[in-house]
View 1 (tube, rainbow, N blue to C red):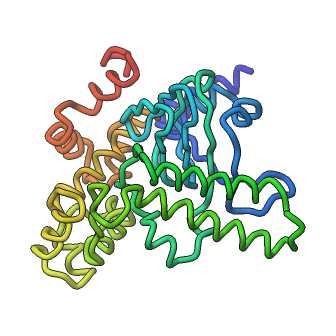
View 2: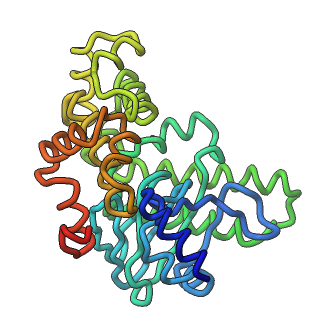
Length: 310
């Protein structure tokens, strides 16, 4: 027991006392095809540890939740969302999230891996758009279409329906495609829901930033690797995300820094190294300029502690 305590203390002093954020991989229920699962919030309450659900975690798969009744608080990447009946929540792989009290809400939840969908559907539904809205409020025909799509998917998931397994999987894939396409375009024709089709230039830049933001924060580096002029990237990002290319990169770095500061015990020097900064001083200056507070003060604020103990 003493040795275990000593080992934990040594790891803590090394910045490894607590995992930064608990990673959660997709796990198919026994006897079910891998890649997708449909369940109710009541079923989730019955089988999941409430403490684990309320603790920040980072799933490696999508969550689509349609709230049928009650009220639910759900946090996605430091933003708290209050869902009411009829609201649709879509959180994506890699986003840090945690549930509030599940006791006062009922709804249906679809968990799926991006690779379960065919590439054309994934592109049309913008499933890789980590910066898309987490919550939508479908109404009228859009709401009825989502409900029908989710009911059909749930019924198929609930039983093989006399189909061979490989056919059952294909039916699930197609029904999920209907659901995610309706979820991605709840307002009808393009633009009716306040969004517009993202350009290929923006999508390539967004994906490159997600892959390489810990290695470079320079627009010129991305422009060179993608074969565009820096001004072209900035114009495309202004249209696709509402900010310039440099701002887009910096926001992604700040988001990851906040995740690591809030949900782990690594010192600033370790976080600086992970995010590609030369040293802790440069990281602290960058974070304070972008977030309006120091890394230590941010950690203390989100944890409700004093800076001396953060």
